[in-house]
Image 1: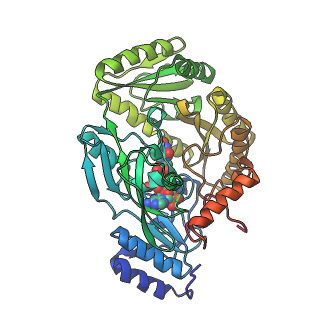
Image 2: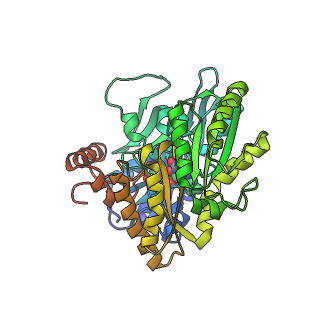
Length: 467
Ligand SMILES: Cc1cc2nc3c(=O)[nH]c(=O)nc-3n(C[C@H](O)[C@H](O)[C@H](O)COP(=O)(O)OP(=O)(O)OC[C@H]3O[C@@H](n4cnc5c(N)ncnc54)[C@H](O)[C@@H]3O)c2cc1C
């Protein structure tokens, strides 16, 4: 899909003049630049080149060149996305942000940070922690995912139950928009209602409105203590009743996570405490705050959890607490390892429909001859519904059909087809069932207002007329 002349040499020379020849990489079907976490379901793409600009000005020059020559532009962060958003469908230039790693300002007294898009999520969180601050969004693959990718997907994670998704932490953005302009929206100012909220539009835009090069983050004091409790239950009904009881009590844990029976079985071996044979569901709730607040909240949460639990694990020391969260982070990998692949979706439903959604994931899988399980962010009604596959064409097809049923279920229960991973290339067909024609029209109009030529991440997120 070379717009210029189809001349790949011309494209490579032009890009090399901007970023340096060593920062232009081949991006054929076997290259790492054309895949993301959806490789576990066999998804990959092809591009004409991947470029690694070294500054926002170089990003702007690359975009200007691509826009002039009608070449598609695919922004790329850490490539951990679960919707194929960073996978180039068929040609164009992948623009990888990993060299943009400057921390432009870190200001503990102002509780803010100004950082470039290519810093990893873990690096941002670590810098904050070392300075007594909290950056709470914690999507799973934090050592690899990037700040820009987190903003572009409006990523969540366990602790966004209390603290909000990534967009809630962003007061300003620097971005490159068509036809190659470096712009700034907002900044260190904490309130700003002048004009439409372009910052909010870019958060979750999945690379379709522009390339985020830097962000201003507003931060919070780091909690002095974090005290998680993992409670095992006989089944999902008991576990979901307890989640409902916690919500109804008005207590505000930092996180309320769950694993259903299937996920728990697959991930059980390395769980850092003994699990009774009857454990068929798990809830992990975390209390945080000052040490006294966290202890008091943990006591109240434990009381609620213990009403139905068959086992409770409440680590006291830092090593035990880290071990529990490390185990939780490994659940996705353990489920992938079960059969070599997985098709995982991230529907979200109203909390009073959570038990129904969890139950039906397993039933949908069985109807398609697959093993199904789920885990996720119970407090947000966010269900990581997963079908284990051996990556054969037959099982991948069955899983795609199961995913379609899953999306229909999410909408029937009053929810959404994506609570946090985004639409990317994989969920676009389902979007037309979630949005009415006027809403789809409005979404397309917003996209075209930013990108009249439709060159930013074509084939992803919101369809354009004629797609
Ligand atoms: C094991 C595991 C667990 C996960 N758990 C969670 C979770 O709990 N919650 C959650 O929300 N997600 C989760 N994810 C999904 C993923 O980690 C997040 O969506 C993450 O924020 C994506 O960041 P990335 O840098 O890897 O983006 P990429 O995968 O590189 O890109 C994602 C999308 O953002 C666009 N993009 C990337 N960078 C930019 C930029 N600078 N400017 C404009 N557009 C850009 C891309 O074009 C693409 O559409 C998980 C993934 C894995 C592998």
